[in-house]
Length: 137
Image (cartoon, rainbow, N blue to C red; front, top):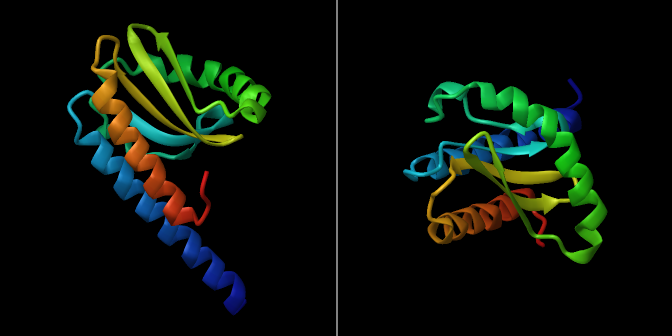
């Protein structure tokens, strides 16, 4: 393998591993049932699903169906500095902290969770992700 390509691949793996560590830290929060760095189609960086505390696995198919539409909204309003999106889905709150026009830190929490504490934790995670990828919002 070309040394330059190898270095880029290793750098990408390192960044993904560091982001997974951040997501694992978020999962330690009682009310964060699942979290990921996602984009359209529910693609992105995600801890293994067995680490999630969510019991209703049907939410994944619903979330996958709605993810593209939410990223269209995010894309459409990103020029106006859209920062966060909240919506309720099947009795859960889904929280998007926008990273870039096509990526977001996404958490699934109980519908009546304390958003104040969760926002602080998610904002800290978002800032750490920006540091890892070398971009700042």
